Amino acid sequence: MHLTFRLLLALGLFTMPAFGQWTLHQLGTTATLTRALNTGSSTLIMTDTNQTWVSSGTGLVFQSFIQSQPIRPSVLLQGLGATIWAGTSASSPNWYKSVDSGRSWLSSASGPVSNGIQDFSTLLGTPYRFVCGSSATGNNSLAISRDGGQTFQSLGVPNWQGPMRRTCFLDSLTGFLADHDGALFKTTNQGVTWQMVNMLATGMIQEAAAIRFITDSIGLLFFKSGIYFRTTDRGNNWTMGVSRLSFPVEDAIWVNDTTILALSLYGPDQLSISTDQGISFTTDSTFSSNFRSHQLHLMPDKKVAILCDSGAYWLSSRFVSRTQERYFNKWAVFPNPGINRVEVSGAPDDALVKLTVLDLTGRVVQSFQPTYNRNWNLEALASGAWILKFSAGLRDTCIQWIKQ
Image 1 (tube, rainbow, N blue to C red):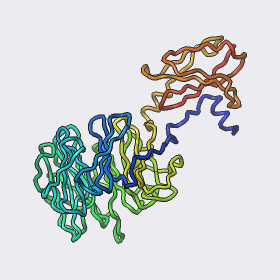
Image 2 (cartoon, rainbow, N blue to C red; image 1 turned 90 degrees about the vertical axis):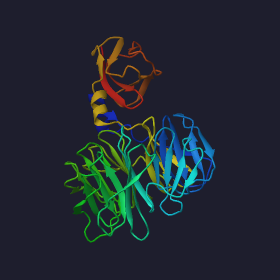
Image 3 (cartoon, rainbow, N blue to C red; image 1 turned 90 degrees about the horizontal axis):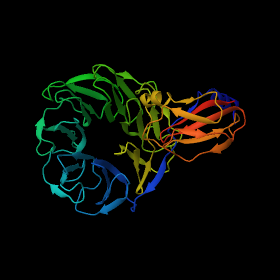
Image 4 (cartoon, rainbow, N blue to C red; image 1 turned 60 degrees about the vertical axis):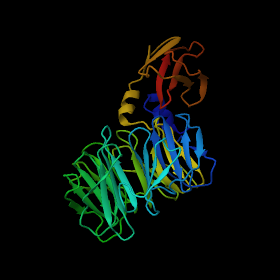
């Protein structure tokens, strides 16, 4: 074991991250998994064929439904109750509607947007839904629902030639539209008028891939080229990010208050991660896939799924935020030094805790099964310094303990 690693362990300064726990799963299909949506405790996954997969809950046991439904949907929009709208960007009709959480679908000749559907944004805790679209000829449209997706009304769009690709609304009045050519527009009156924030990618074809805000002030705008911009003032000013992401970028999501993931379609560095609210990104080397990847999706239990070709999806453990890191770093062992028994404080009350005892070279000398108890008998150990590694689902924390 590397000396530095041993030293960090001995000093109690090393904590093992929650990354690197991606597992591959396969649905009973060879189709491409294109979109996912949480419907209560269940998850709906749609493909590029006329097939929908619905889980029975957080256990992720999926059942297949084959109906008259959209092929390769571009958006899934949650309405009131079990109502779901599915929009397509290239086929006609553009919209399909399900009133049973995706188990069956009815086509709709008209829907929120008449042109090809590109993106939507939802104001959580409100009935507001915003949908944008762009036809192949560049005709743009934006629609709003104020009743949870039951009805939609058209709104204005920027007087701009480029096709609109992504939208994000911070509240019922303030929102953004990003286009195919690198321009970003902002409205503060629900789309009646628009102002160009700036031409973020002048002279370059920079199709917008995602706009994501974690607070009213902090947001990120991603382009397929791997360039991204960051704002800290509610989108009035944007600064180019210090990292370059693997391209083409397909999607990005916030998974907690500090961590955001960005996904590329293919390549050795498909997944990038930032743990500082998007200031910088690094490649998540723990994720490696031979599949083309299409969407990041946060599951009901806060695990992350990556939808891929060939009916495949990757599932991660939960990602730990800095808020959680500070919580877990409050763990302490007492008495320390001690004689035969130790107790630990700082562990979540509802967490099973596993104790593993290592010597200062990192060799495991004793291991205990996960338990809700917070004390252990270590009389079998010889006197001296030991490393106690506590595992509680999300994280491993190592603390040096001296036995007298």
